[in-house]
Length: 139
Image 1 (cartoon, rainbow, N blue to C red):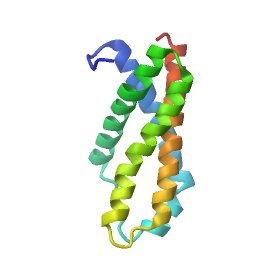
Image 2: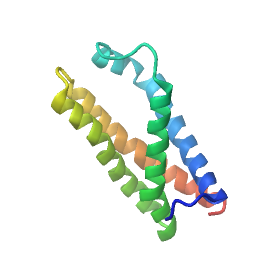
Image 3: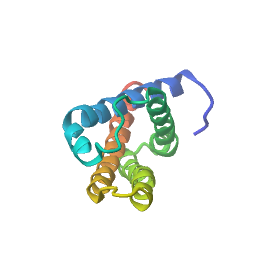
Image 4: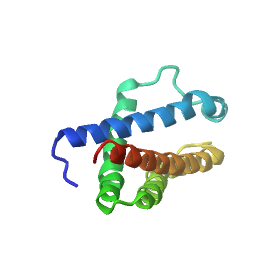
């Protein structure tokens, strides 16, 4: 579970990043776009800050690989990937959403509830699909 750079680690990172981006961008750009605009439009920017978004995706994917996928591969357990991935998503999305609910005036409760469900689903699905693809490609 070390963080040493290897081609295998790079492959696992690229697979996981691809899976995460496909699922999350489908959610953000197609499924929930109007939902977030309706509830958070009053604080949303017109232009996404790409560097900040990239940094989030990078850190999140490194975290899910380190804390979820690598242990699942070591245990050879898709169940570990799915359920610990879901728990990882719940924890990480709770950090943002519950803090926002606690300190941002007029933060919508519905956003917190939907985001916690989404983060749990997204992380579990990303971990499971990435685990399966990594195993299929020889790790």
